[in-house]
Amino acid sequence: MLSRTADHLFWMARYTERAENTARMLDVNIQTQLLPQSAEAAEQGWRAVLGISELQPAFDEKYGLVSRKDVIDFMVRDPDNGSSIISCLTQARENARAVRGTLTTEVWETQNTTWLEMNVLLKDKVLQRDPSEFFEWVKHRSHLSRGVTIGTMLKDEAFYFIRLGTFLERADNTARLLDVKFHGEDHALLGATDRDFYHWAAVLRSVSAFETYRKAYRDVITPERVAELLILRGDMPRSLIACMNEVVNNLAEVRNDISAETERFAGRLHADLKFNSMDDILKHGLHDYLTEFLEHVYELGNRVSRDFLLPLAA
Image 1: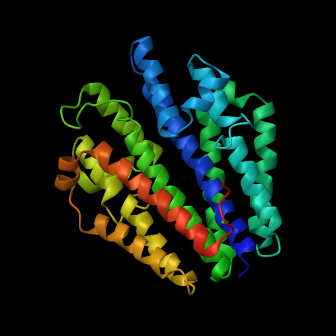
Image 2 (image 1 turned 45 degrees about the vertical axis):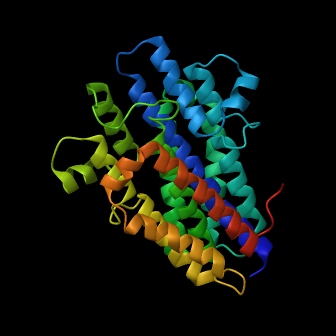
């Protein structure tokens, strides 16, 4: 397969997944903000979302003061923000259009319809009326895109590059979602308050894992178990180990003459998750562990680009 075609497929999937996960992260914070809290605590929550998404400098340059309305506008419908939902879904559609002949009609129409409907929804001011409704729509369209891809596409290199992009992006975003509570804070995981309970419940709901948690643990929600579910449980679809398992498998399907080192790098990252324990992660420090994981995922993405895709812009 041509590097240019693989690049478009890979980034189509990454941008679709990124839009969904941005919606999930914003929705968690909106749910958490419903709890009684000081204005300072509310601002810290929004700063954490910007910080963990590496968007704080760009936001400060454009807006200065942090408010719920401005953060949501910036992360949803600001075309100058390359990670906003409108930018991600536009880029996903543009990448799909570039390789329309490689996709099935249903996959292309799903991407195109998502872009068209998004513009209608944003003009209809649904974001001001009920942001959570818009975020649910984004998640639904992402689910639909994945389902149509799995249900209609031939299991060839094109399919595997789409899946590789999806799970690499999901690993990154699950780690960010877990880490948002600790971004810019030094407190430990232990000693959770009532407010923390509601935060972790919101995190579980944001990754569609609230019922899964109840089924797996049949107990009250604790941050340690939430972290275990979203890091080490291979049967949880959005966990880090489940994502890395898919990354390793899909890399094996598209391997070429120069990708052996990238496969080894991904394999080591997967093995670290597979043979790790929650006790060891907590001793290391959850925030430090997730920060290190994000650095490794970023490096893995660069290696995939170098071996299979178009070179990343400097």
